[in-house]
Image (cartoon, rainbow, N blue to C red; front, top):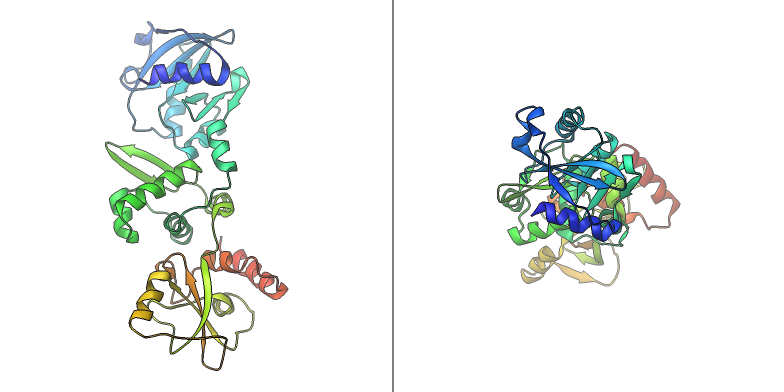
Length: 324
C-alpha cells in the first residue's frame, strides 16, 4: 500500500516516524478530488501536513496536479503534499518548476516549504557511468531525429524497431532509470513518451551514448546500398564542407556483415586501395536511422567525436549547429 511505502520512505530518508490519520474534511473539497485522492493528515518537522495520495497509477499532467493542489490548499492551513507511487522523471521536473510539493516513495522527495529536496534515487542513477544498450540508443536517437511522436507501448515499439518485447522492456527500464523519457503505465501496458526538449535530451543522453563503431575493415566488391549506408568522413562530407575522401566509408550492422560473409559478397583486404571501401561494423543497424542512404547526424557525431583532426572537429561542429 502506498501509504505504508510513504511512511517507510520518510523513515529511511529523514528518520521520521510519521503518524497519519484520514482527513475528515474532504466534504469541503470539489466533489471530484476525493474520487482521485485519499487524504491523510500528519505532523512533520513541526508542520501540519496533508498528503493527497493518488488512488490510481494513471498519472495526471503536472498542470492538472497543480490545479488540484491549489484547490486542496484553499481548505488546509498547512503544507499540502502530492503523493504518487510513480511520477515520470520529466513530470517531476515540471512539478518542481511549478512549486508543487510531492513525494514519490523510493524515488524523490520535494518539500520546498520544509526546505527539503531529496533526489537520491534519480541523481544517483544520472551520475552513474551507465552505457546504454544498442537498442536503447537507437530508440533515443530516433526520438532526436524524428518529429515528436505520441506515447507508444512495448508492443508498438517492438514492431517499429524490429526488437523483441523483452528487449524493449529493458529499453524502457534504462530510459526510466536515467530520466531520459517518461515511462508510465496505462492499465497493464507500459508507455514511453519523450517530452523533454530535444537539446535537453541530447545533452542528458550524451554521457551514456556509445560510439556505434565496433571495428573498421577494408573490403572490395562492396557498394553503398539498402543495407550498406554511407558513414564516417564520407557522410561528414555530405553534411558539411569538409572535402570528400579518396575512398568511400560505409557502415553495416554486425548481423549484416555476417550475412555478407556467408553469401560471399565481401572480400577483405589489409588496407585501402583504389576502389575499395572502408567498412565500419556497427553495434546497431545504421540503416534504421539513416536518411537518404547516409547515417544519421547523431550517430555520425558519436563515431567521430574523438577524432583529433581539427578539420573533422570543425566540420562536426558545423553539422551539429544545424541539428536543433
